[in-house]
Length: 207
Image (cartoon, rainbow, N blue to C red; front, top):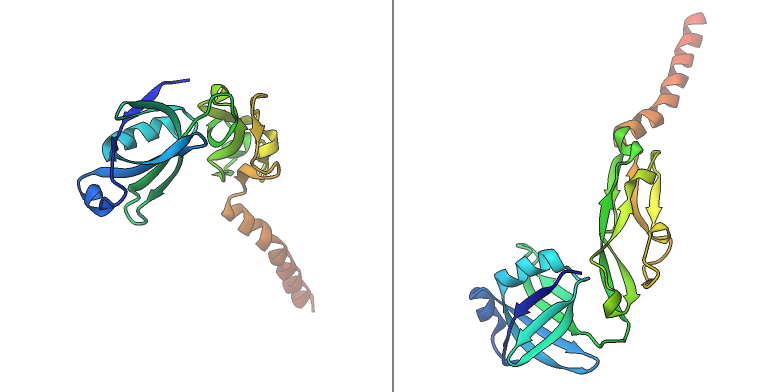
């Protein structure tokens, strides 16, 4: 697994978060089973670069003051319009103890259904698992080559999840589907009606 790290500064809990964001600083908090809650401030650009690579499934070395602890991104908030991150929660890891986290899905392979004009709909981008910190993986591959027909899909239960993990996402949750294109659906729906209309016209002509 890749190594990630980020530096932070301790902040007062009553510090104005709006003022921090205007200065391109990102309010954050770190907590855990054996970690007291501490309010922090991060450089917004540094976090954005980090999170694009680490997501929620990679351990991050969080450095602040004299501390250097292993954490995961546990939760985050974004601004509804701009999509900018406005707050981040880090969860401090306890070695030897399982945790719940989200693992990013990596879609690989080519679908025969898509080659026949099916529309690939990725309904889930990640799944939730229970795992020891030492057994975390960067992602789980999803092989699209099994999607050979229209409306074929892959459910959570069909993912190749490492034996060291327990999948918490419901087994019947659809991850990806090779949906039939709307135009084909319209044709299949309208065809019977057209046939009946044609027959009716023929009967009228004979009469």
